Length: 255
Image (tube, rainbow, N blue to C red; front, side, top):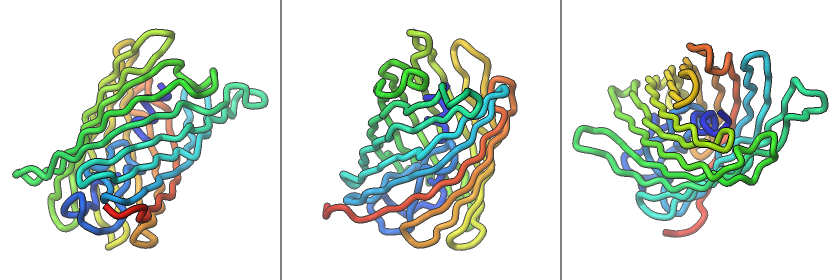
């Protein structure tokens, strides 16, 4: 469950530059389930962070800093490092179910834009069992994500993502497919909001369907604040979650 939710949560292919190397405002994977459909510019480092409170079946967990480091290594390629997240169990005495999660490494390749105006990327990643026993899956868990987006008008963008995850649960794999769809509305130049549906379908448990709302504000060209809320549409999904985040980008090396 932790890996799937991390893949889910852990926007913004929505406010995108015309091409992977074009200069422009920061474009993040936060805060939507749907990742950005473009890579970060070559030679840049982008760090995306946040905190999340999740309630599910009477249990409540706070996690952070949800740090994802994205490095543009070529015009259409980025490397991705997901730092171990710390989960704090609010229901157990002394946080006995708490600890750091697993580290993950991934690669993202931009495939679009296509002739039909779609931006498309493919992300491959692998998590390593580096976390605490109470939090780690205990296995090497791969995943595949294919985010896409298309501009509908000057104010509206549609986006989505198709994903496959192979998390380790009870020393076996529990293959899960996921699909998302969102509509993003540009409110002002630096400020936008979205509504999103996300459905995850594990092989050995019930479907996890979510309705997700969020907003992001670019406080400067390379800095972004975000806020988001999700609610369950099915019994297997988390009852609700609330999160905030801060992301920034800087030039690291000349390409």
